[in-house]
Amino acid sequence: QVQLVESGGGLVQPGGSLRLSCAASISIFRITVMGWYRQAPGNKRELVATITSGGSTNYADSVKGRFTLSRDNARNTVDLQMNSPEPEDTAVYYCNARLRDGATLRWSDYWGQGTQVTVSS
Image 1 (cartoon, rainbow, N blue to C red):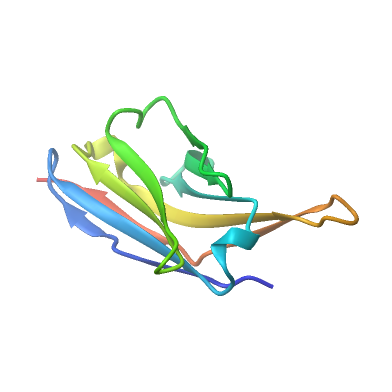
Image 2 (image 1 turned 90 degrees about the vertical axis):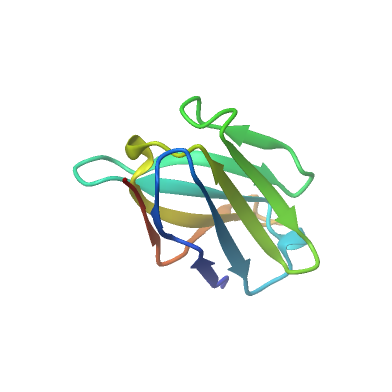
């Protein structure tokens, strides 16, 4: 089992900045892929950004060039730096951890409780 605790959500003005942090209960080196997803009212949950244990990142087209995902090995966290957010970025943001069992090759998914991000002036 992996517990994920998110922090850093809140209200931010368009063009401002906000940093989300996700702390894992196990070493992030053991997690195959970590990332952030978001869900706005009436919409499906969608990928924002992911990072592999090797450090490779993947971003949704809508956030490329504005959001940056990074790993802090000392703090055992994965952080999403949100620059120049737009009202369309308003959503509940969820941290995700995916682990692949080395013996069975089966994937396990874990989710945080979610943190609200509201972009508004």
